[in-house]
Length: 259
Image (cartoon, rainbow, N blue to C red; front, side, top):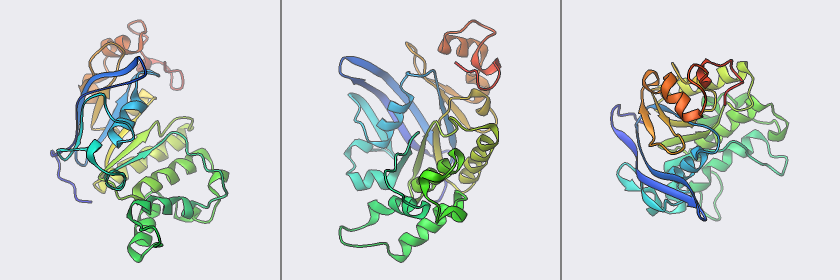
């Protein structure tokens, strides 16, 4: 993956979406530059996961556009979308006793023909993804028997095996203890250094400053706010977004007690 700093990889332009009569997102616009690591924050239920699914092409906006390098993601076919954008979900339900290697191999599905198995380039991509996510030593372990932190790294390896231009992470640090959160953030720094563009929904605001190039804040009834961490993680904006009294905003509360 070749990085071109400053070049816009993703443009979301006036995107709106709703489930039935309930509007979840209204006129959302944001930009993610290639090679950057960007945080998406906001209170629970504000539409962060929905926005990531719109960007991945799993959902289509009711209004507006999601553009990757100037092309509408909604116009991509399934294989094109999977090769361009990988969405790593909060939960990955695996009903069978698949090994880590078998799970990561699924990331090559967009490149395989109906009757063709993995080729050399596919196996090389799987090895690259497992090495980058530091799960090579887990290759023969059963996925469902792994710890939370190990599962997160395997899910990221699965996404990387798709060789996407954009990696989307939905609450990757949720339910991880501090040590596993630090490991996850180290992995994100490593991926960014290798030119992988990342947009991650983050619940714990303590993890944002110093780890992400930019921050997008979704808040009920307000336009999305974007900027550097020091410009977005202010007492006024956070108190407004999370509906708490000034001076008691989530960033200043003890870790693990965020709204």
